Length: 148
Image (cartoon, rainbow, N blue to C red; front, top):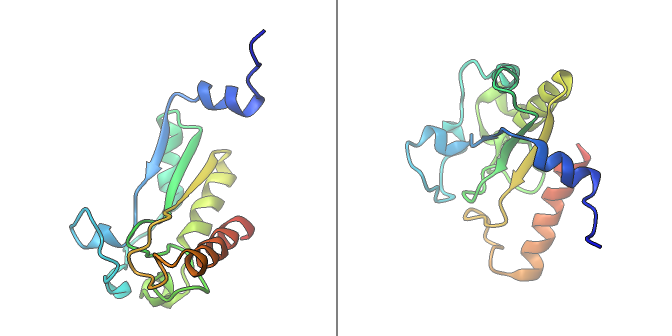
């Protein structure tokens, strides 16, 4: 007898279209690979409207939208207390923006499931490569995302 798939496994397989929103500081550098040395001040999207993103996702039949909360360049789309390489240093909403919260609220309000991508590689943080120190940093950021 084969093991039966769980509810979440079945739900995953029934999804036909998933959006992956790869949005971050590199959106403004015209480069594919971030260095971690980008100035957070360049992150200043005009007319940011995460509700529009989710509305488009719904129109295409999406049931799950994933946002890159932090890519390998280390820039965080939420105000992380662990780094200033984030929206804190951005002119967006005078450093008080939280793109992750706006995104998750927009999805929740519209009944769309959310996923967040938190890169394990961080080219900005000096602790990267120091296993214990970096793991503590990474776990702190992961907890921020899960608890906010």
